[in-house]
Length: 290
Image 1: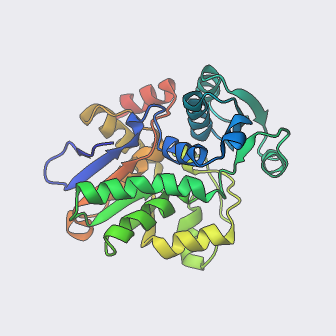
Image 2 (image 1 turned 90 degrees about the vertical axis):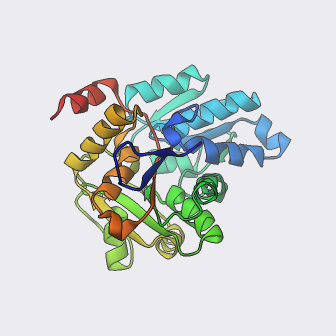
Image 3 (image 1 turned 135 degrees about the vertical axis):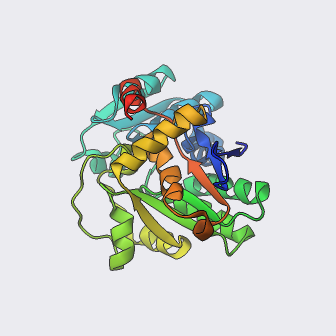
């Protein structure tokens, strides 16, 4: 996915628009990589996962590419349009509650090949291709801003980018209303925090992150910053109006973080716009705000 220059003079910001992927999200990279590495027998069994939306879309899309069945569990609080879009790809959808989702992950009620959304390193390998492409396209990049949810995207990008350019700064981004990694970095481990609803819902929620994943993220990212809700909305609006890119809050948050840091501190920067799945009504409301 080619880089774009952010449409504002003299910011030295470039955009990695994963919103332009066929499903509107970077998730397709990880899922395709995971499915491609399955044995033919395991692939024929079908593929499954649990998701809040974008991973489900990726599984449905990739299953169509490989002509295999798909079955996904989607958290019942996910936006209806994501559920409907997943069904359009032919995937069977199981709705689960936040309280039962871990049971589904640990004991799937089927024999499909199951992609663990928070513990499958094959996903991380696919996401790492983003980091490789960024460094190859801009060899003198100074900073890469990446949204951090469970941590797989950020760790994959960091490992790949630093393998080519060890001194590039990888800056993870949390919403101020869900600062799980930001607090974890400060306290040396994931710790309780007060969760509040956020526009960046794609990187928020109740993550059961393993100590192994947390340590990998802490070792590979240089820091994790937080962004308040008004700045997330402003970035969504800027991207839609100035760059003609429809981006969800969890994707636009990387740009919001970069804009909050002086150019002299962050240098030439790339912001990963991780996804574009945003409800039309929510987007319209943001665009109407001043």
